[in-house]
Length: 309
Image 1 (cartoon, rainbow, N blue to C red):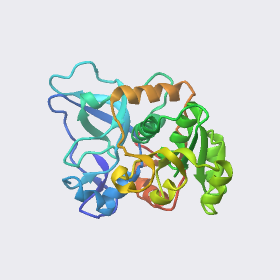
Image 2 (cartoon, rainbow, N blue to C red):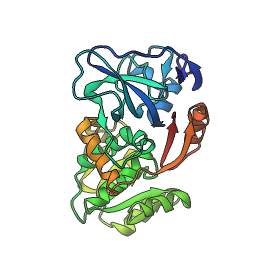
Image 3 (spheres, rainbow, N blue to C red):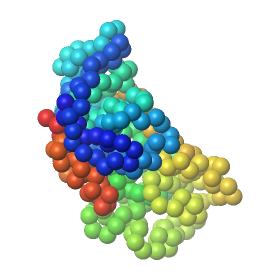
Image 4 (cartoon, one colour):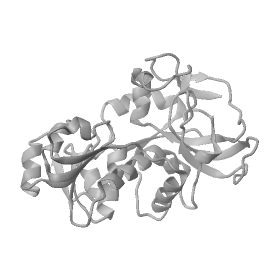
């Protein structure tokens, strides 16, 4: 099959032919129609993830996938050939990925694509959506509470803005002037903080005593902590928790995306119903994925989707 791979540690993404996988016991093979680019993928090609998990080269890149069940392994129940499914590739050692024509995953990791949701959108939802839902659950904003989101224009951040606003929070979202500002305003941010300007001054003008909660998706977490009211909440997807916060008077949580299929299906239902948007900025064909990596590194907003069929 054709796939986008990293051939060795630190190797750039490239298109190659690799063996087509087969489903083993308890596994399902999916014919992939769509995927998307995430920060995890850039960490793989940089070699950063080698310190945390074993790699088996060539590594097929891409964590997200959406498509149709193509092959069932022994013992799999509840799915049939042709079922529309989506999810996140979690198998280890790191080798399988969504940037290939087929991917094999445990049946227990599959979520169903609801009626009314197209596969391109489903393929861009999995990892970013799960991460966004997890981090918003961690800060648990109450109606009327001020929430500052650092890194609000990315794939995860753009979903955090919507989920926090849906809970009734007053959302302060950092963004560059122009496209980023327009995006977060459209998605429900009440205030836009120009991240190229005096962030501290802008936040202080809106929340003089500090915000009640903050989400760390980019930037300096310790500077962010200074903007939170005493006793407020802080959640990071970048490995910053209570131990690192030290003297800061905040409740700090380092969180990882909860990829439970039931949670993914709940998010997908919200998207299908029009209550949540996956802001896909651009869609690439499989052979264009190396360019997608370059565009991601240059500072894209929203999600970069990949179509395979």
